[in-house]
Length: 341
Image (cartoon, rainbow, N blue to C red; front, side):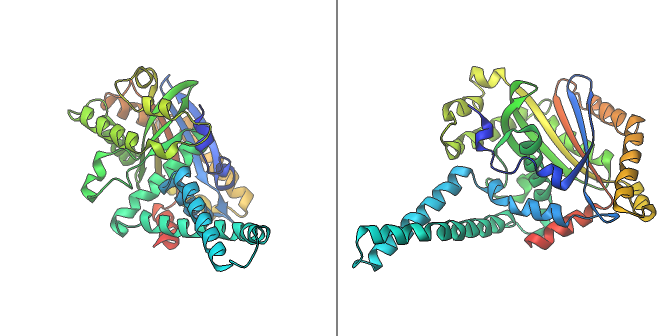
């Protein structure tokens, strides 16, 4: 069984939209990956990234089985309508018309799925939707980089915005460090890196040290199992997926529990580099040199993460940080708002 078979987004999207600067291990259980958004000219520009993230929303909202079933229903309806309105034609002529219409029906259905997924994504209003952008980035990076499939997310299951604090930002299954793993993700888009780290680790803390950790995890696993039939496609062992989401099974107990953490935050030096750079290439080189220099000092990020992990008693956890420093987080939100609201 391979979760890769149900990953339908382009796993090479990062090369088009992001620049990878650093991938490091902090001890045995903490990983850190540093990316920046590919600039346009000599400034950070989120237009291309927001376009890509908007395009993959259908795969975030719906499973591939739901999408394929919807397309097949449309094709059957179209065939039925053609046969009903062309009773004078023989079977060969009917099949020719049905075949010629097939691609148009597929495209029209996909457009409808895309529009419905956009509406569903933004249905809780502008105050709530800001957090969804981080969850969409989590989805894209975990499926693209870690190649682990998202099995459940909050967007379909929350009926009250106040429930936002109670669930992870996505549950994924796959292989991590050559072991079967279940991943509970977190995403934060904030001005402060320290604030983003603290918020993310406090959210993760409930899985391990919070008095309600058993209830929270059981609730999310229940939601995931209730919807696992949506991933019942050719080549996927649906029973194994179910067992890996059942806390009483050996398959669940044997897999690693991993927390991928997406942090987008502001760094003022990026604005200074944008002013100094004279060409696109120079800006790329300057930001890479500055980022590597700052991260290699360790105190700025390495020690900050280590200290907060220790403060939250999470040294036993597998934590995989995706750090995305930007010049202004509001520009990312504005670019996404422009596509969706």
